[in-house]
Length: 427
Image: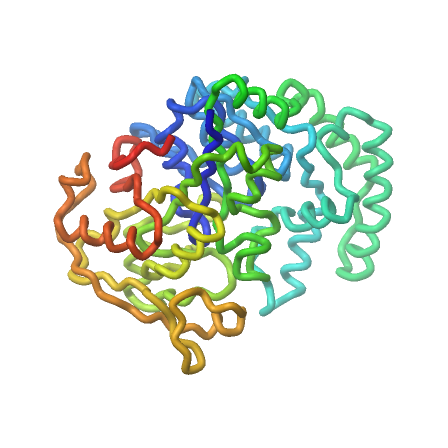
């Protein structure tokens, strides 16, 4: 049976939680494979809205096993707070599995993240300050602390002593901040161990066995393709690989296991944080999209930067992810526009580009080249089939599909669970 990967096809915040919730009753496992609590998914079920930051969206489906895999970095305090919040609302959390190989976000990671961003000033990247980048840096430098270390007090203390010997030097002597006490951090994290223990598993083994048994696994990325550490707008990116290739390493599955890659793309474009954004609107239209689309970060509450749909970005995502299907979200937000601009290429330094320019300098100076499509005035939030959409809305979807290079298999016309038009099955 298949492993299906879900990726953001822009800069994140495309509505991946809605897509996962759509297929929640048709899959057996939903797996978060990278990132940490620097991202969020919003899922609306009836009149209930759930903001998930670290947990997979599948936790809201009673027959799904939600998995936090090895590629995720975990702040245990955030995890437990999120679990308690769901339990208080009557959501069962006992099915959750957490990889023993996932890395832990430590207090010094959060401290360093915040002071480093402040130190960078105008050159700051725009991180959430939640310690994600420093945790991944320690993972790569082989000085990280993993979930399994929580259950061996001797190893945990040794790793903490080694880490704080270095981190405290940086905090106190470089940034003039107070250092952290080994015993205090040790006591805090050993205190988390017993609460965490029931969830911990060899998730790679579990997922491979599930596929062998004919079950369906849904791999849910956070952030988006243009924030990928390798394939995004570096250095204004996240510290992990939200692309489809990152799902294999982040979940412990071989690439031949993945049979479908679903790209989530908004009917326009948004971005949070610093970095190039060719179609960004600094006028009343940007404010209009932000207000009508509710474009505020689930995790941070920050205003999202807003702009028109960027076809070269969608094409790029199709290429680097191997996207087989698109889920187009927030089409309803565009209702009321007489004409809708769509970016079909760029001009930079006197050169026309039909694809994303190779260098950051060129992309930073890229000016969008627009084509204008007919809009519609009708409220489409009540549509329940593609044929119920206005002809111009249908034409808009088909044009984006042709420009992006992969079929649009589902369309979001509102935030609700029932406000999705499924043209082809995403499973």
